[in-house]
Image 1 (cartoon, rainbow, N blue to C red):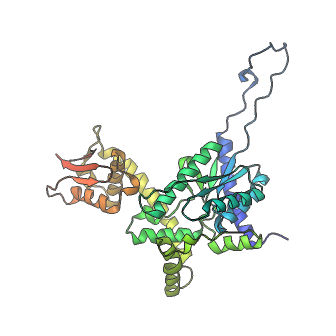
Image 2: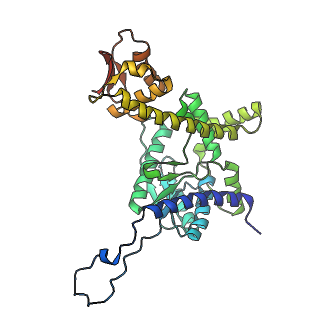
Image 3: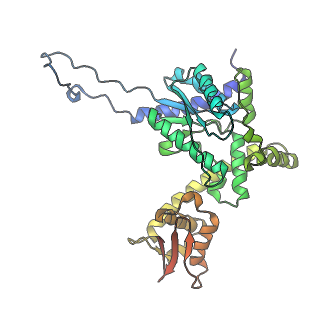
Length: 362
């Protein structure tokens, strides 16, 4: 008799990602050196005709799971612990202590013990200091990813698995919609992000209830983060008030529809970004200025992407560059009436001069 459907679902999702990690690892592993290429260690001369020592084999890749102790990440940790040894992959884990609640260090130590009991190794708990820039949620996220990046580098991990579910994806799409963001924001979270595709999200097609049920079936203890139900946080209000209201008004299936919208938006955004990258080469000169007439001829969606790329290249922080900023710059092209410099985050200024846009920092 096979595993419970919920357990089977999370394992299949993780297995797919591990296969992809293995394929990437194999394709990028150095080929074994031929006998003529084998390095010979300094020391006593090798007797004539004696075989060279074998080259050290390239070890299996290490995959870490980022685990908070909540149901989603505990389900992910259990699936990784089950699938990794069957595929010849090393599996470890990391938990990040944000220090935002009393006893958070004790809970982090408990999560470490839980991950070790699953057979994960290495396992780390990392304490971080959360700043204030961008609000509490953004600051905590920045500190967490910095810690995960450092852990991945320290252990030489090929990938870090994150427990974001289809429900998290739906919430992300709605947050982007509420902010009036563009197609890229509406595309939600990608299955693979970070340097070299380090971060993987196996559960983007798995709903939150399935992850919780998998923990229950396997008798996995989970921790309920009080921040997840605190109305102080926008995502918490959306989760407990906004989405239920939408489902009551529109019927079941809202989460699935929003997740599908994310994928469709991502496909569109990828195509437009590729178009913008090509178009940028036709409007940009060697001095880094942009031809206003050539920009005007581009479709608005492509033109604004070119402007955003140029602003970021000049030093504007991508995370602080919003649609309203790009719209102001765009008016230097589409509604030119002699207006002055447009100031962007990062002390970047944009002005129109002699039929060209000049984008400079400082």
